[in-house]
Length: 142
Image (cartoon, rainbow, N blue to C red; front, side, top):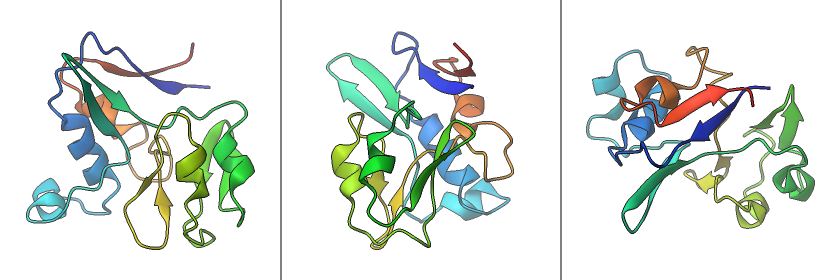
């Protein structure tokens, strides 16, 4: 299965991956309307550690702790991708606590949010990959 991989040597820390992710998952067709004057809510986020920057997103683990710990059954693994059903999420955020990569976030009061590889929106492939000017984020099978 294809997954997102990050080469921190190439990451500029520009955060364009975050903006492209937020836009792709906004449901809007115009980036300006989707993001201008609103809080940016990406499912991927850039971390800085000294001089190194890198994007953090869900790794769609083979045996995901988040799925095992979800008390409501909102998290599941389908075709290799870990997905969240926001209608089932009860907001306990246990998944946020158990994710060893810090890839699940709280952006709404009632549901957790995470990368779903842009499989459920109209992008067809991860928007963060398309929006990375330095090709520091790739979507490939390894």
